[in-house]
Image (cartoon, rainbow, N blue to C red; front, side, top):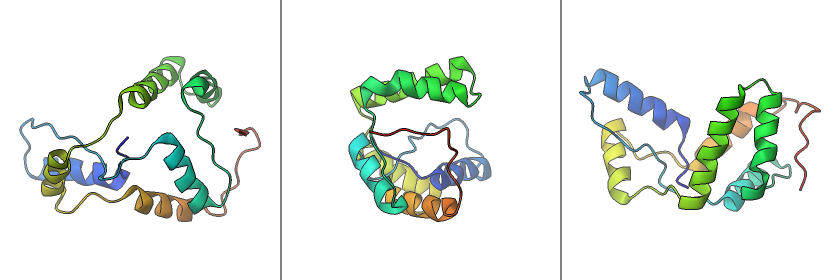
Length: 136
């Protein structure tokens, strides 16, 4: 999947608002493609803590966890179905989509590495709730 930095999502929203967008559609993706395993490896690297990719077989477990945090059942279900579709069918941006987004936001999309680095810095020192135990 082409992972996207949320700052690029915000930049695209602002650009559309400021430019008086009249309904054009944009694919907002990052320029790099990551598998679940590659994403887990990246997060392990930036967090210095074990991160495991659960894969397709663990989506029911993820759904149950999301519900336990208070997320409404239908949202947890929808989120997991979305991820299952991405895992099954890929979600990889084309060069044309990346160039079009870059034109809209005024810069190349940020890398997923940059997003992970920034997020890890923000999370540093934040305790992980005892109720989270993903394990292998």
